[in-house]
Length: 76
Length: 344
Image (tube, rainbow over all chains, first blue to last red):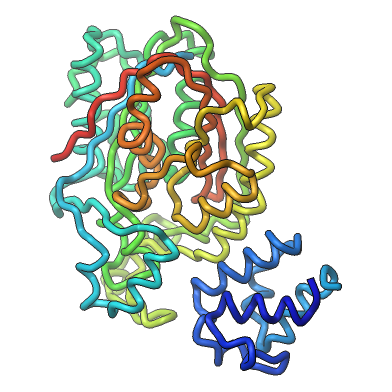
């Protein structure tokens, strides 16, 4: 999965138009960034990419770019 | 150990997701339901306890078995919603059920893993203490221990009480066992003021606004769903593979994987990860919610009755959650007596 594909997957999970999701986008501004969205992001990281998730670290993410950083070791 | 018979009791009162549209908003409730899969839950009246539901289950089971009640050697009551802090509710059930004064009674404080841990404890009593017949009772009335203004829990949990009869005589049905614990996540599901660490005061009963506009008091159950999901996807798939290896079974030869009915999102995820087809992973959460330790027997009673009564069935039972705890039992049942669902 490339970085762009990862961001697109994030957008789908968080119910946003992929056009509106950029690395600098603040996660709090995304409508789907709530307890349900968090589960989807964990599933994406763990299930699709095999990234072991630290939930506190995930909650500390401020931007989409921070989420990309969590996944970066497994991105093409 | 042989699983002889199983029964379950739920309150008749069914509360649909639609019924709380007014409280949380239709769109929000629908979003939660899409994720959780819980369209309705059974809710007890304020005077009904878990032991009342388990009593009905056990009473029907003992009547149907035709066994002399004095032949029951032990009662294991697994719950997080006992009648009292003191005494253990298993003693109250021993008396109500008319069991002998030689009955070994104790309570176990577990939810999600309550049934699988309970089976393993039952097996331990039969094999380790040489008992012949053990009654394991499981259940919770979680609706009474969570805030009706906290949508992270109150739309998820339903009330139920189940009972199983275990016997030493007969073929050994358990082929594999796995269990584990990780207390570093102990507070991910908790009732903060339910014990002596933070003993309840008048303040503990006050509803307070928390994250996402939910309101609950320190007497209510609080759950960190993301932490629980994260723990589950790390621990459960390896556990299931481990129990299959211990049983020397392949996943294909298993007739049913009966998961604790946590929520649809988790079960779907586990199924995909373990490559278990939907028809081999029956669910009842859509109709009853997450019924804590009763969720596996409730699935057996409401979704697997014919299959279990008909003949041999290779089952993998999978519990995970509060504690944090996890356990799995691989067992080949043979003509289990499954009573129809009891509604009170």
